[in-house]
Image (cartoon, rainbow over all chains, first blue to last red; front, top):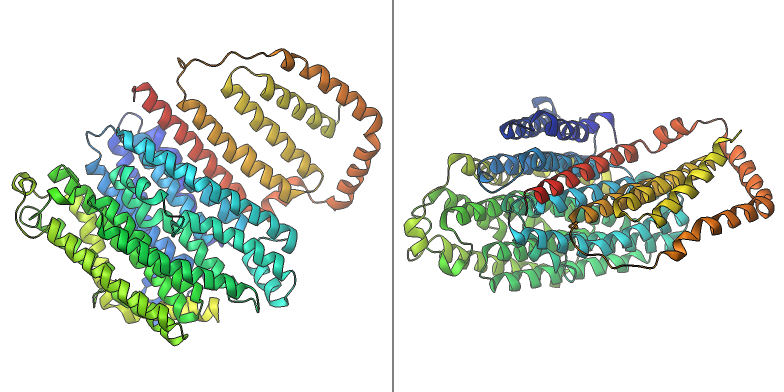
Length: 477
Length: 163
């Protein structure tokens, strides 16, 4: 990690250590500290990526790893939205702010550690820090479901950690290093290829479990459904992406460098991605609980990223990374809005909701933007990332996968349209009669994220140029 | 005069005995963490930094946080099974026999290990080796400790509130 990226990890960590002392008696101070830290980080990384000099150069002046920089931006963006939302949402729910916000900041620091680390062992350490912090965050409110969700999350991802540790041990024995650069050189040289492929397979297995890809998805709906509502958005929006999917994409970048053997692993990755898309979409259609439905939708969307990572062409990586960013934005909106709906209507059961657009127009329309983006409707950001993935599949000759990905995208649109009708439109339910729009403080994060979704879609050429310049040309080719 | 290495062996043995013999689970978890820290220092001393970092990160860091979190979740009033602890009282005697046996029969082996350590050291200090090669892992350890302390505090706060 370079010094310039270290600040994104150290500053939230420092704030997290400071908050329990300064905000012991005044809970409001904890909220202010956390939000200011995350806002400052977001402005800083935003300026680093989007300053006029960087834009004028077509991103060529960025010396850092483009994938890491984009992920740091996403982490701060989702972290700020969740932190800001929690400040209003947590009132009267027994949340201990003197520990909730520090844990949120430790999670942000750990995620920055994951995406900026340049070797597998450091990456693993930060993934475990993230797991420990997430365990406590899930149980933040006074609900019993949270404890159950936390235990399921930890127990079911524990075997993943065992596989990762075994993979690290084999990697050290076969390659003598964990460094990305050194591994890349060893792969090019052709030395210890079978042992190295085996170690990467074990790492991949562990990170696939942490990603919640089918058939390792059983923990995701329970953890998301049981967690404290803003934490569900944090988990689904960014935590599982960074603790699992990010590493899967990184490992896939190594697999394409092998001449033999590893191709099989890439094929398995593509197959698992496709199965996830299908199982997630079909399961989502059958759910009545809004959060559970969104959890299965997440499984399906992660499938697109894994499918593209398995294909491992430069265009597929552009699609995978862009979809990773998009998924973080639209899933955060949907989970935050599900919390707003629960707060206003007192239920997440979609059979008891209906006509919510009348009392909650802002919540409804931001949800519609996020849903349409998830389903891949132009010109929203989700359309472009799915389009790139499908073109990459077609271009590489994986026509069956391309057609299936397209068909399941249509199925995603179908279940989101059904969901929109059941919740926001149609006949007014008794819940809609009594509900009213949530406060502007709860709406602001969803509105900001929806604006990002629309902007990322409309300014897609800039995004593509960033991804092509900083990821495809430097890391893949 | 006890040398640094001998002190480490002694400290590791005593901490390991305390971990097994302690009746209090929190003391046992902390003793186990101290054992792991001692083992990590022994590994550093023998110039095996990777093994030491693993020991420190996983055993002293992560597993201790998990143990202490689990212990903090248990309620004091929960009844524990009574167990026969006679065999644990024999443990120090057994450890002493092993130590005397090791002193007589294993010393040449330890000397050979020490030679390897001197050969591998090449004048680099422990601190510089750790900081230059595994700086990010150390920061990860700090983050892990921070997460652990916050988790324990939040769980204890919830327990006090009677949840």
